[in-house]
Length: 127
Image (cartoon, rainbow, N blue to C red):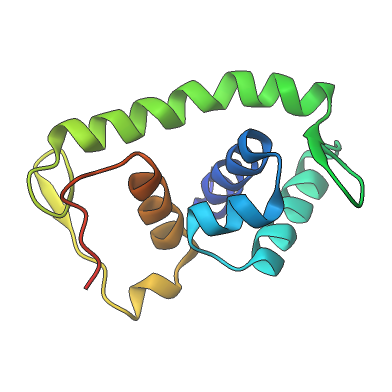
């Protein structure tokens, strides 16, 4: 699975949980158009509609509910592990991850930081 695939799954999870593209984009620290584009690409790649959209609401379809049940606990586990192993900055195992302004343009960096921020990491600092 590619990095973009993981990002798209994290984006789907945020949209399905928030039931809002705007709130999910804010939670992940990305623009709403970029989030919408990633969702469209994921649905096209999987060949199934994951979200039912109207002008007033967004909700997971049956396929989306199933996918959310499968991936949400895994993203929560990742966030919990990051929170538990974090002493300063963002760390995974014994390796610290630094994000410079250039690297923040990468979707995986924005997604990882968004997930960590939404998990409430007390020592997360963006410089």
